[in-house]
Image (tube, rainbow, N blue to C red; front, side, top):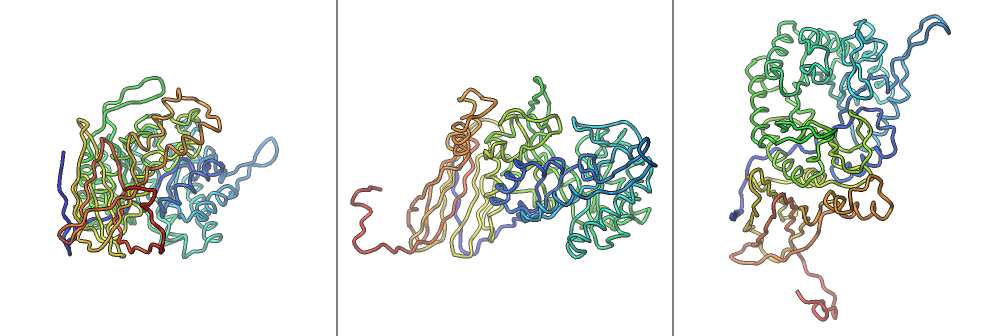
Length: 500
């Protein structure tokens, strides 16, 4: 396929880029791992996310709710914030603020034995609602004491995670979730009236859109605060299991966009809530942590297509997750295993990382947007673009003939990520898929995960800079077209040894 893109002076196109709003993580205590922190720092340096959201704030692994009792002493309860402080300090040191997810239930407060994941998250209502509210209130008071009221009250608080799925909330009991929301939002507002609180954090399936409608009707009728609505979004369809791995076809990008627009329309159908923010607090291609698509170039270009459009339907979105230190279904034992992360264990960048890096750094006035490109004008007079070739059906090259209204000399800086130039998964496969990488292999794969870089000289014609770029299937490209002021030193002749 070939298409021409001509930018004219004064062109503007709507584009709401919220790529850097938030990113997801596994359960919060994983932040105590050295590899986790190394991955987070590397990703954050490239993407500069504002918020981070993860599970398990109140799970036993964080150790906040503590009990002591017979035979050693009378039964006592207290709160321990040692791990919480370490995790929050690390996030803030990385330039991140928490998007709080209030869950799961401490084991000693759980009303039944139901757990989820290998690390046994208690996904049930509290047996003592007042103890749960005390936990919420005192945790917020501690955060205020440590980080200041002005800061903490800017952190969004989402109540629970995917209560419409029976694994995440016992029997997917809607009435009991609504009651949890009632007591929890009241506890939050008692401590921090200005803190933004929302839910219901539902995922697709099980009448998810009806959950949003019923949730808002409940909050309206009970006169409960709801400052934003949250939901999750994944593209996976028709799952097929092979051992612990899951494979499935992918719904088209438009499927997710339409699903999110339907949620937006439901919210706006309530006069009381029309226009309040809707956040997609998790999104990805597959919903499984052992699905090999996550390691591929296909995943990267699918994310690029989503990032070019999600701002049309949501006020923030959070990719699930930044890294592969993630343990819902056990500890990964191979560098590539289909983990959710943008970065594989061993600090190997996956192609998807570059989709987020390119879009996070795409700043300026949008002048063009379609199914293969987003182009913005830069403050320095140049242009920047993210280009991609998502092959949802048959593989096919895409050739773009680009024309920019830029006079004088210019240079086109290109970062290329495709299946031939930046594909550490393919390199690992050709190495024999070693489970344990030696130093030489690890160094090679880290380098293989970096974009190919080159500088092109556009053709000048008709007061414009013209450039032709061909994108192979599942290619992702960052283009920076920059004005050039030549400043060669007298006597230095590049062409003496080097030919263009």
